[in-house]
Length: 380
Image 1 (cartoon, rainbow, N blue to C red):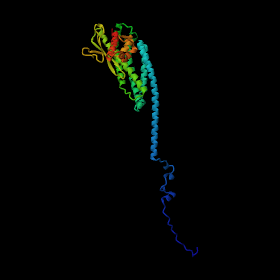
Image 2 (image 1 turned 180 degrees about the horizontal axis):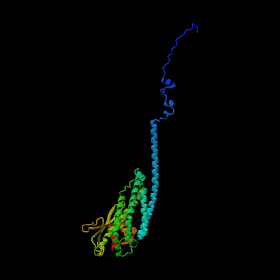
Image 3 (image 1 turned 120 degrees about the horizontal axis):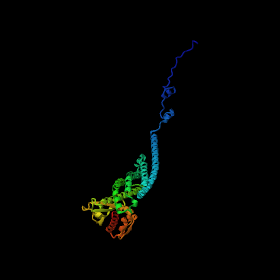
Image 4 (image 1 turned 90 degrees about the vertical axis):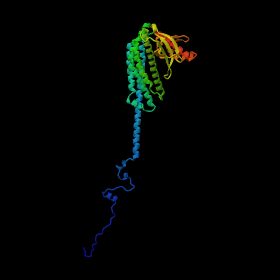
């Protein structure tokens, strides 16, 4: 090195301070610049964040989808079980018809077979219409009311099938309905005496079922459900009225043999109109002295004398009972009216008598005369 060489001191450079961005390039932590989206700087992490509104929409769609699946399942479930219930009901109705035929023919073996079938089918229908899904859907507007009506109607019928078959079998054993028309007076009275206890048991079961089914609200139901339920309710009610009236008549039988009470008796003849309204049609004032049933007076139900203290023994006989007795004993001929067969009793009591008579009171007396002949023929 020459002595002429001048050594200059090092010049210090004033570098600008490092920003956060510059530090980032040298390994430091870098934050995104203002206005730059997180997805541009941290792909794979921040890009997965979903706005709250979108998450809520997805949840709503999932809930709606789940509800739709539940409803679809319930509809299919109810449809399948409802179809099975209808089929079982049809089978049960067929068995009930055959049971009635067996009872009428005094066929104990056949009646037992059909009774078991009726009970089995009734229990099956109750099971099909009483599961938790069915009960849950009953809370659905409109549809639920129809399902409730079906279920409660089935329960009433099951009561008859479960509790009423035994008394009906006992009644069949006590009274040979097939031979009733040809039976002598002594045989008829003996059969009615044996029938008193079974009839009371049948009445208890039928009253329970009839009361239960009467309390069911059918307002707003679709036509087929409402009509079907009404048919079941009216059939039960008619059966109950027929059985109750026959039971009342049977109660008079011991007095014909000298037992107490011996009368006088007031037989109240009633008729049940459409809608379940029951009206008094006529009064039969009768005695059972001397071993014979005798009607001393027939009065109409509108202006006639009602039972009083002089006639504490009062029984009620519905037109349904008169039809049953006419079926057992044959047609009845009423003066001024002509012969009345069993299948004409309802029409005669509801409209026929009123069409032939000049006023309602005379029409009711005509119905009372018919009832007097039917009951007198049975007991005498």
